[in-house]
Structure formats: structure tokens, C-alpha cells
Picture 1 (cartoon, rainbow, N blue to C red):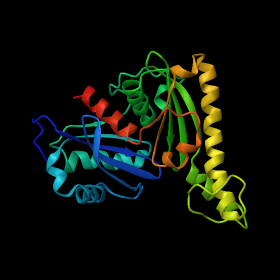
Picture 2 (picture 1 turned 90 degrees about the vertical axis):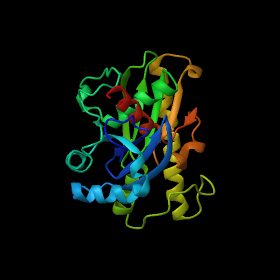
Picture 3 (picture 1 turned 60 degrees about the horizontal axis):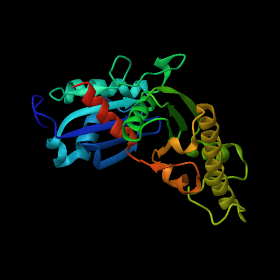
Length: 265
């Protein structure tokens, strides 16, 4: 990798979620290589190092810095060990309380807000302006985050993710089973598989439209003034079924990490 004194041409950004970790190589807001791997809490720092270097391959030499946000403390601990021991020559930023993001967090307890949600707020305020709502479709949770017209994070909502909802139905329903997450032929399904798919796709779409509509009402601003941005690896499943979105930005979190890294160099 490039020496620490050199201006980094490429950033390795890592968004560590409960179920998956998304890694990307990003330069000036554009992600040109990406990977999604399972977030395994038992994986050691050495194992993470082997995995990341294997994914990077000959692109390792391009990387000039690393930025990380995480919702799993035990995994973040291993990443800290890895960054210090394996990538110590590179500048790195771990998003946590005390790290400059430029986003005022106006909640009852700012420290309990997930760092990925703050990173998303920064990215949406920078790229789209406020007021804005970010809907992040993860497997474990779907999060809704609101930025006001001054670029301040004012709160949000959390619902069960699409994958975890489907898993709960499979575990608790005697005659239900796991199905492929895809759009069914119609809302009124004619078999159990498509009935589950209908509930997941159209049910989540209706939920998203409803929550976003209520959030915009509370903001008390014209509907046309609000950017509503979908992100997360499951966003593509329901994006076209929702009426509220103005943009689909799959790499919003990684772009936010690049912004945080630049602020903390």
C-alpha cells in the first residue's frame, strides 16, 4: 500500500453491519470496486486481514487510507487490532464519538445513534441537501433517518429488516418456509411462496411510504422540498414499488465514510 505520507488516491471504506460488511474502494465519491461479506463475530483480526487482502489482490497498492463505521462492537474491536497491527502505515478513521462529521445530532442521547446512520446523514446532506430522509435497507433492520434544512440530524425510526422478518415467519409458522426474495407476479398471490413474497415486497413498500409520509408531515415542509433517498443492499428489491423515493444511492454510506475521512485527515 502507498506510504502514509503520500496523498491517498483511493480509500478503502468499510461499513460493518450486523449481518454483512460492505467494503468498497472509493475515489472522489465514486465506488469502483466493492464486496459484501458476512459479519462473523468470531472472526479474528488476523482472519479479517487475510480476507481483506485476498479481496483487494493487486489493488492493495492503490489504497492510501481506510475509513470504518460499525454497529457490532466485538467486530470493531478486531478491526482496531487489525488496523494497528496489519495496516499501521496507513492513515485510518474509525467513526465514533469525538470524530468530526460536521453533522449536529439533535437527539436525546447522540452517543446511542448508530455511526452508520450519522454517516448516511452526512452523505445525504452533502449530496442532496436538506431536508432529507434516508431509508437504509439492511437485512437485520430498515432504518429511517431525517436531516433538516440546516443539515442537522434530528432523529429517525427503525423497523425489522426484510430478511429477519422472513426468517421470523419461517421459524414461527408451521407451514411456512424460506423463499427467494423477489417481486411476485401480483399482490394477490395464488400460492404460499408468492404470498410470502407479496407480503415482504409490497408490505415493506407500503410501510416505507407510510413512515416517510408521516415524517414529512412532522417536518412541516413542502413534499417537493424533501429528498428521500434509498440505500442498502436490499433497496433494489422494493425501490420501484415505493412512491416516496427521489433517488437510489447504493453507495451512500461508503460515500459518507469518504467525507468523514477527508474531515479528519
